[in-house]
Length: 590
Figure 1 (cartoon, one colour):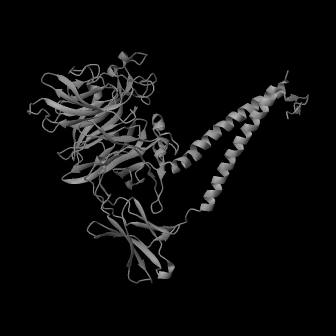
Figure 2 (figure 1 turned 180 degrees about the horizontal axis):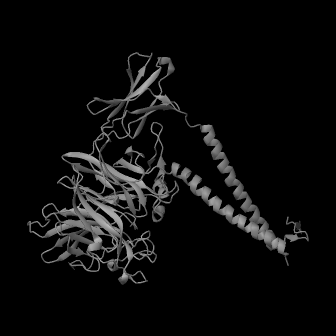
Figure 3 (figure 1 turned 135 degrees about the horizontal axis):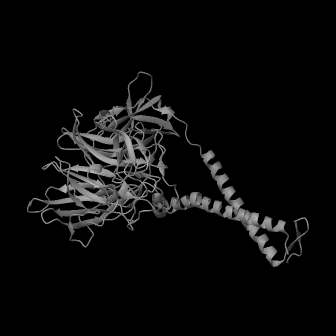
């Protein structure tokens, strides 16, 4: 019988072996699998979604100081190879949150971190001009307090808007510019109401988050219309559960949670989406009364699709598509799109996966039918956020998967053409990377007010121009003496956010260099300052780090192997414990 001391030592050795095994698996996952993928490129896509390259793989640049996402194109069709994608990445894995314009394949076009947390970026029109618009401010859980920005083609702020009212702050969920030159925006504010129907001793002086929306004139910033959910939707109709909410002003119950507002031009009525009541509602543009509700506890429509048009929950981004959509132009026939999450955290899971839906409403017969439904390549379940957009160029359906950092593009008949992941799919449930909405457009033309950038590192000259969309070629120019003429030395076709040239030989006499951006007609768009030299990476350092990692892994393997051999020896009676707790060899096999 073994003494207590040997048993403790065995337990410690077992824990050490488990730790070594876990560490070994981590090294294999983070070091050796990427090496395998380097030699077998077909493994890169599945390894990416297994977080082999981390939860959020990034791409760093020499000529630009901010990193960019390194997307995984899990499915691709050349029909998607045009336009720019607008994302607002945030989450625990994002060191520099902010807006980003990407190309169709996810390569960086423009980004900045000067606005802090940014959500809901898109391209919108105001008085015939195109603007990048977004919300920026302080994000508190699923709400926000901030302002709305409009940037012109040079990325300068054209207009900054705020909610109207001393106690009101602009919420992150909506900023929609109408054809009339007005803006629709959301406001969340605490309000005291009767919560007796909710029970649990909340009483007549409970507190809720009142979901409001405003329509303001952009030019004058005057309030044109204001609506409050608390005046029309009893908190007891909410599907959200929060046993701690509603008892105080500092912890109100979010019973409604408005997340989109769209306006019908002909009638002036508003289409709104409420996440927590599972309703898409039409609001009278004059009285504010609820005209009809789709979904929720008081659904007004007969579902002609066996429940598939009304069984949505926790949805986002309800939008008009056709006004009217009936081929014969019959009044009262409408088509809308929305993103059906089917989930709101681990306590509210109603579906196996999220989807985008298009439904047709007949407000004469009060019927609704599902026209199309769109699911992601891996049947993603997004617990929050999400968007649906019909691309005007080709009728394709572009879907952003919200809390799951991905987007998909479908043909008009519903065929999945393309899908890109901006984070590992295995990390989606943790929401470490997310973009509230994702939009795509072929209309954006960026002409930055700043100069291109050129930097020298490791024998190459790296060039980029953050935000420029019209570059066709880069020309490298050299100067042999200070104040001398700039002469073309080399030229490359623009292929990515950052391109590079080999540094010309010193024997050619060049002293300094600059980069010149050319458009498709070879007109100069801009020139950089003289290229500056930055420290380059050292292969010796990289090889040293790699050697340390490999040596560590070998040591772990040796330690586990030694432990297992010794444990087999105890079981076989090859070793015995003496009274001091050390081992003595009883006999050795030949």
